[in-house]
Amino acid sequence: MGVAAVAKTPRRGGAMVRGLAIRAGLGIGSLWLLIVLLVLWELVGQASDSLFFPPISEVADRFVEMWITSNPSDAFLSELFWSEAMTSLSRFAQGWAAAVVVGIVCGVLLGSSQVLNRMYSPSVRFFAAIPNTMLLPIAVQIFGVGDNMNVFLIFLGSVWVVMINTCDGVAGVDPMWISSARSLRMSTPARYRLVILPAASPQIFAGLRVSLGIALILMVISEMYATTAGLGHQIIVAQSGFRYLDMWSAFVLIGLIGIVLNLLFGLVEKRLLRWQQGVTKGE
Amino acid sequence: MVDEVRKVYGRGARAVEVLSSTSLTLRANEFVSIVGPSGCGKSTLLMMMAGLLPPTGGRVMIGNKEVSGPPAGLSVVFQDYSRSLFPWMSVRRNLLAALVVARLPKAEADLRVEKALEAVGLEGRGAMYPWQMSGGMQQRVAIARALVTEPSVMLMDEPFAAVDAQTRADLEDLVLRVRHDYDVTVALVTHDIDEAVYMGDRVVVLAAGPGRVIGDLAVELPRPRDQVETKREPRFAELRAEVFSMVMRPGARTVHAS
Image (cartoon, rainbow over all chains, first blue to last red):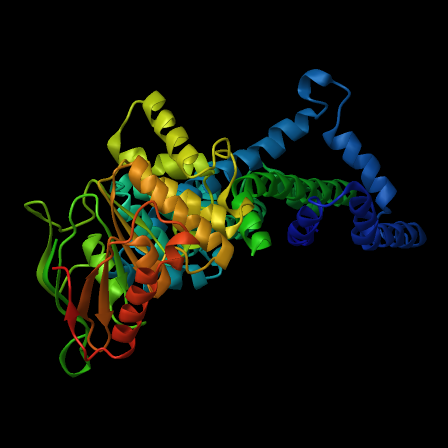
């Protein structure tokens, strides 16, 4: 479910630009399938007596029980949320932030220099092509079972797509803009800050968005494989203890976290790439 | 000053000489139009003067100094405003980007930006983005960005090729006006003969294959120029015909002014 939600948000983000009426219409238009599926789940769940497949209303009750409190000082979120979800999110934040910084810096270097590009691009593309989860045993081998392993895996899985997109974006900047910057006699740092990075930003953001999804997946997977805390760990523990309601409830939380992160990302992206929308519309 | 400058693209058997040995001198505060058919290397010549393209032979000098990169005190207005203005910056920030290298105090930079915007008739439009503007307005922003550094030389590469006729006439007169406000020497590359004669103190005619200077005419039409009156003068028609015949029949070599 987490994955499906991740894939859906960009389309809904785009609809937000238009008027309220259209937005409401589109909201129903794009949510109808979700609603139908949830109703179906409820009906099937009530009809069957499989322990594994509880109706969605029970999952919702358990969700509230597990993750929500009436305590405003905890922002209405339960102790379990603060311990488990925050463990996961802090690993995610560290790994992804490192991937963003390293990916953009290395990508700019690769995109700016033909020599560096020739030297490193094949290796980068090799690492990018490796299925990320394959690195899990290696990460555990190096870091043992602990936060560093998760952070490292999230970093290693999401850094490549950022790097490649940044590299391609920087290498593809319109030479006219660079000529302009040169004729304005900008220093090299100013040229990168004011011209090259903004010009490449649409592609950099495309890479960041993909990497965000990868980082979320790796967060959960790495926690399922070997840890003692976190949402992925919760799912595995619940599943092996036959507490299927807890398991589903963790699923839903991960899905919601994915949606919220993507929405936040979309807001930042829209703010920073406003000019690009304007340019496309103007033409 | 351009001294025996030539440009060859490619090497060996596939080398193409776009510009053969060419010399040209701009005098202070002069307006020189460079006109020629497409492929005569007029834009190449301008890019070498701007320090954006190294010449294959010869040298470009400003005063006693040889140009090796974009020199101080020289601005360029490119043909394609949509690809030379930065769409991620507001108009004001586009202009400020030209002042980054000068490291002016903020107040003075703001003052210069206001002055340049006023000179091109865009006062109060600093907060707009280039893509919110018409083509003519965008090119005025590009002209303002060239002027904001208060250059002594402004090079213009077919700056009005992408706008309609009415806007083009307005922009021509605008450039003639700001040229005095800013005391700037202008070299304008164009393929439009009327425009070259109408605007220039001198018209330099290039021929193609390989590019070379085949004419250098003084335009002694009175200033200020006027779109209707100037173009009605018999001398305008004569000069226009003369340039036209040179562009059409590059064999005949005429040199009036040196």
